[in-house]
Image (tube, rainbow, N blue to C red):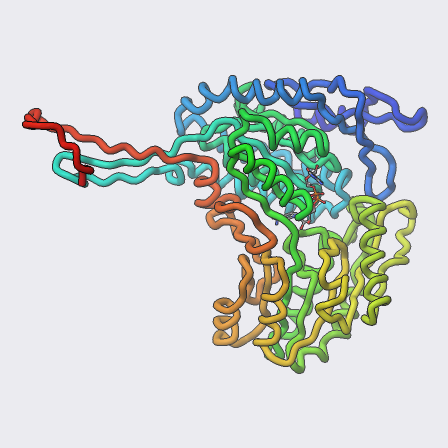
Length: 519
Ligand code: NAD
């Protein structure tokens, strides 16, 4: 009931009025178990990307509010860390059920603020839910190691302890999945949390915070602050925050990694991508082309694992026009409209940027096989829509190849051999994801071994690992030592304590102090 009320308040009630004609609710902060109005005088208008109407105002939390969030997390830490692992596990069981029960509201909130289709928004929640489900096995995940008799009557054991207050900074493109990569993993290990969601679509995070409270997360254990640069700097600099998880662009991620590690924090930073799909001539044609089209244009290309670049090897280049046929059939519409395949981009600025990058292809000698820049979406003329776009004859020196476009744009290259395709991919600085399409096991095996990318699909276009594994982007797509979720996620959010203990039934008398290094 609380969840529906919060959704209702966020969507329909007016607590402030920016324009006389457009009443909107302000997004609240969540501090010490309370949803509160910010006292800030700095607000960010949040627009529905399909209409560009203002739908809420997001506060830039004041310094006092951000300090209050960290103080609450610090106060809550001891009690939460000392609670039994079974207690935290039970809360995760409840939490995963509540997320399932509220899937529709969560997805609707995402579609409204982020723009993606409702089906895709449900996928966003599902992929986060799977992490919460994984957290339910904390009783196994958090096991330490033991060895008896490392010396006479001596045993060694390790325990995994939480770090303290941890923080997360998230991007706009997965408003459910990415926050859920972070705070449930941290909290089930016994940490408390301060989350700063994307200022462009924090509504889903607020619903997730409400559900966490309903599941039994105690006051102060989870806090949500809002803002942009000041909030990010606050998180990086605050001495009580022990670890920072970041997902977003390279510009922000490299900055945050440098600034937060300087103050001694652990940082994991997942960043941008340029994922290459390699199409071999022996691939299963129909399936490959469908997979490629979905992975390039789904979510309007606003996925860090979108297959935004395709390399046709040898004779497979004859299939290029077949992709055009498939892409043309996709329906561009507001995400809540039936039959929509792709929704709008997040903002007019994002649309301008994507259009500029398409134009750079024209200017630098590429060919626009399909141009989505002037797409007309009836009834949503003010939305940030770009239709599926295919740029062919691209070379690796072109701007549209070098920059992450983050829109529904497929950049097409050609190569003579598999080795050439691997060399192209490995020369690109990003290492987030890649996929090969082939019917040959030997070709796939060579690709897996030779490709220098962290997440590899074989006939799988978007190889995002399930949470029992980790999200293993590499090279310019990642900074840090331990990745998100899976075993590495547990490692990131815990510190080891190694205990070496000697217990003898009878004391052994030492005739003199042992001053040499004990071995
Ligand atoms: P973004 O970097 O603009 O924003 C991410 C977060 O960083 C936000 O909370 C924002 O407030 C903050 N931020 C933005 N600019 C900043 C700056 N200059 N300094 C400090 N903080 C800043 O990213 P986005 O546009 O929201 O998301 C899209 C990007 O995220 C793409 O590059 C995409 O590839 C990447 N991404 C990566 C992964 C991954 O796992 N590798 C997953 C999703 C998205």
